Image 1 (cartoon, rainbow, N blue to C red):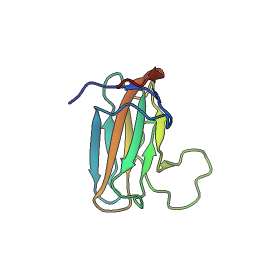
Image 2: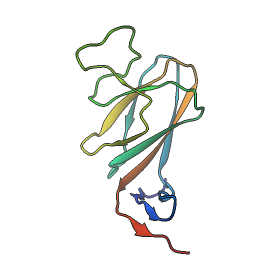
Image 3: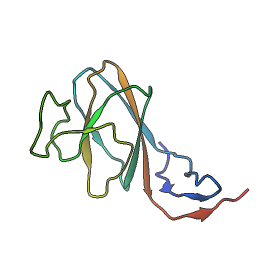
Length: 119
């Protein structure tokens, strides 16, 4: 495993991120939630499904993630397909997909600052 990189935006025309060095992946069975423990010091996660049409849900409060089967009107639904999330104070989260063999990569970063691009 690599060290946890800072979430640094390079001073480049496209505002590129520093390359990740800490990437985890989960391969999910259909409708079987998995608990993910973030690496120590991680404050940001970027989710990248293997395929763009992959559907997945994340629950941040310690409860198991689930695909909603109908109306959820009390604020407790799982979040669909998050992309970048700040996760300070969160140690674990739950992830699930209704699709069999869905692979989700998670790129973890610690907070950083903008820095100049060097050659």
